[in-house]
Length: 298
Image (cartoon, rainbow, N blue to C red; front, side):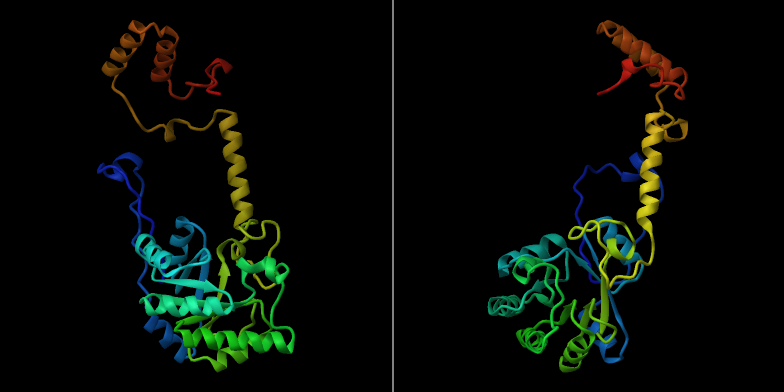
């Protein structure tokens, strides 16, 4: 899968020694530009999902989705594009817009050896210019502009084009006119592939652009938001009732001898109440921390 990889800087202590649990599963196979072109030529649909963080991207990868689009690229120069690929571990960048300056930027980035995906139709980063989240290509002039821009981006060297919120006939025309794959979002079924946003298709009830609205073109393949809300509510209730964490989730132990030594040192420091609390916790971890509001850490 086209993807990004976050780096985590930490000590050389094995993570499993601290956190335990199952080992991280290996990420899926890498999908190349050539493989995307082959799928297009064979008439196979290309799958893409937009994710906004590392855990979401891992879920997308493990599901076998072809392309993971991480966020949206803001105004870019070649230098910033190079930095994004090197530091983010990405395979390509996506560049929105139909202005001549965007076409020029795409060409420059491609000539610098970086793969670029174009984006025409509704471009979320230009919503103020477009007058809000409005479909594009609904008039003759606007529809022709979508196709012309897509062709210009192809000429600039883009390997694929996202068509967002345009009528199906316009997307079909652009797809037929282009030699490179098109990825539709709210553009009907005639594109080379489809993309939806992770939050939207899972029914997570939130989205960086439209927190309370699911787009008309989005089918919710799950209602994960309900499960998330339920889990968070249960977590809150268990913390407030002090039933979490219980013995099963209090895994780190200290020997009786070290407890005695610890208590003695606390007494020497004049922390007799702290020593009493530690002794009670050592005797019965199930009741430690529940007894009074005096232990409130606020």
